[in-house]
Image (tube, rainbow over all chains, first blue to last red; front, top):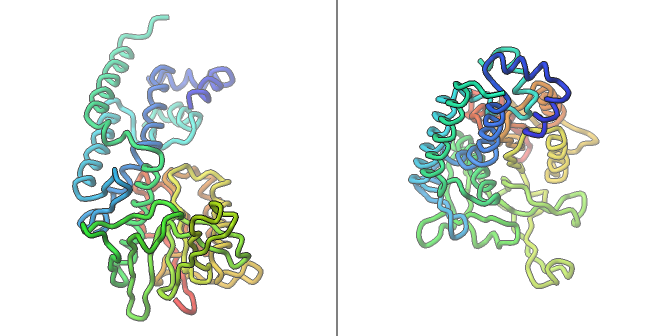
Length: 117
Length: 249
């Protein structure tokens, strides 16, 4: 996303200016992209096992190799971590939809259009 | 040009919050790619089991002595040494397993491993030692595609077009009940088995949603996107999931 941002700086500077008018400078956008990537690549896949847990993975723990155990305690910790990250983002006014964007261009275009709301 | 003071404050606040988050949770999130993929797959398995539990009984088989579900992490493991889930409806019984290799009805040489498979209860896992696999030293475990009711794939990625169409290849190779040259309608609004699912973590863009709709019209499949965002939980009666209507299942 950061390389796409560099490309957009050269090819569509007006889009970035428009986002900046809504309070999203390039420096802030770079932070949003890191949060987006961290959530989609790291946190969300881990938290997936805690969304709608079944008896398998809670009361009956799942043993995955020697190091990982999926059980009630893990579900609780994962949910706490997920909620904590979302709270961090919301405090920074990074809306959940910004974390779900697939491309820098989509996110910046949406901000430029609606101010990130 | 100097950045506005308000922006500096925002950047400092986010940096401090991220540091605090990392200090508190890094042990929890610092996991290998394989473990993250397994965690996503387990989330999908939960959705599938939740769906089946509405129409029958689930029983966990072959737990360890400690009462834990032994999760098969690779097709190289002997499925007999790992746990699985038995699903029993009023009329029939099935096996829900993960990481079991399927040999296609197209050719015995086409063998691959969907993330989750629902098998006929009569399915038997074959073991052989072909000379061109691990120098003939390790068993090559597989089931026949004729025993597969549904094969599900889990991808913690964005639903990019090539991912969506590659699932069609897996779908056709894994399900002998589907004849592409003479496709019948095997789908139902509500049935025992979910149609084969591609579970995708990332959310879909409008153009991808159009492609998903078109693929779902053409094939009896579900492409479930936005799992990272809880968009599609596959609860019976409250979603647009497609089910199978097969003669013997």
